[in-house]
Length: 183
Image (cartoon, rainbow, N blue to C red; front, side):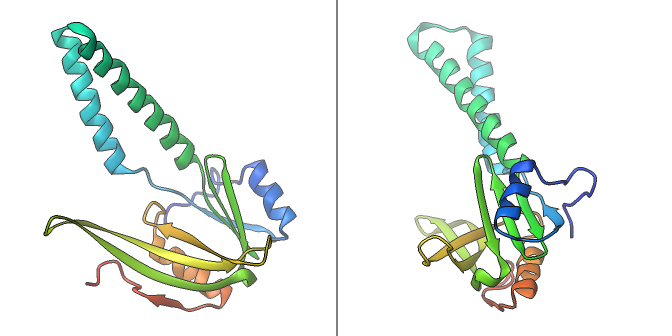
């Protein structure tokens, strides 16, 4: 599967601890998260505005405020981005552990009830502005015995392959839209 590298993809101790607590078996592979290009583009625009203010002088309260606020946004986004990319979805023989920042979610294959592909279209007025594709994995929570829905979106490298792999291991078919390029 794309996005894996055995030498650098070893699970962190907290991932191994969670997998051991949930009896998820042996580690198989890691599926990395891809960086969000939309956020990177927005930060680039903010940095250009900040640099423009720095190059042309910080006249008044608004100029200083734009520079400080812009730099805070870029620094915060960079911190969150690095924390998110360092995580990923760790596949084990009996389930998976998903890590992004401080969030750690573990799911056993036997808990998965359904996998549904969904595509969301965005529009500004009546003009199409883009779309997003995700698989919703519904599973039974061990705490409270209620159904929880987990979204696997395109921030994961090869999300289609990942959904097929989860489907095969859990024995649950993928329903709904299975190809993000379908209309």
